[in-house]
Image 1 (spheres, rainbow, N blue to C red):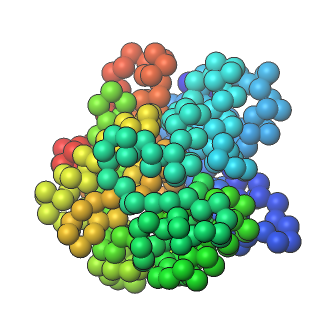
Image 2: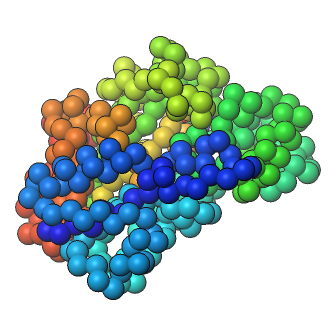
Length: 343
Ligand SMILES: Nc1ncnc2c1ncn2[C@@H]1O[C@H](COP(=O)(O)OP(=O)(O)O)[C@@H](O)[C@H]1O
Ligand SMILES: [Mg+2]
């Protein structure tokens, strides 16, 4: 196959005065793109690195590829991840991963939560604040709360001040999100406890990966600690896989992860983030249909636990996309991802 790759490099972000510090946090390092290209080539394919949506548009009429491996996050508002898929759809070019609608639904965390609620998938109670007025009336939850961006990832906009215990703190953080990140603030009940993330792979019969637990400063019992943007920049966060939790909780989290994936119509692969409270109740924070495929991340961690490799997992995701478009005979071997974490 001739595969085009669409992606954003950190250098796609032109910094200017007044930018937030975490502007390009979600974009990829060139090493990640080179790594993925090498992996796909090792399975016998030819890879053409296209780059961002502008570069895709510039060559769309002479783009001679069978399929696009898309990990483009885009620049802009809540449709930014949908930009590449909608163009590829228009030109009838197959691509890996979720379509424009799913990427839009999930990038706007409130819309994703509305899907979860409709499907009875547990998610923290929330309200949306478009400005810092009338917050005392909007807040039907009480404190503590966490104030997040509505459509960013990689903990953008999150610092220790994002967990608020009173009206003054709530006002301060809503103002920050609205003014600096130029979007509504998503305010949620703060779930004190533990944190997990789970890969999901598949289409007709998606399977959850072994559960990955988040550890901050050597502790998995996070209590009121959470994954701030500053923590994404250092090495104080570790992933523990498989999470040292009961089989019951493992299964509960994996089943909810698959339900969340299906609720928003994900394709091929995704990753679901959870907090679990002191009574072992899991809550879905969000779902990522374009999870990082960097070696430092979760998709390079759980395959080792189930005796497969990152390379085979990437190839499996690619083959799932081919199969959806009828581009293979459908005989590709699934990667070793199982509900229980064992083959
Ligand atoms: N309701 C919540 N209760 C406790 N911690 C939260 C809550 N929502 C988010 N967090 C913390 O903030 C981090 C980032 O939030 P998340 O919704 O996953 O956004 P993103 O990863 O897209 O930035 C989570 O990994 C978690 O540590
Ligand atoms: Mg997250």
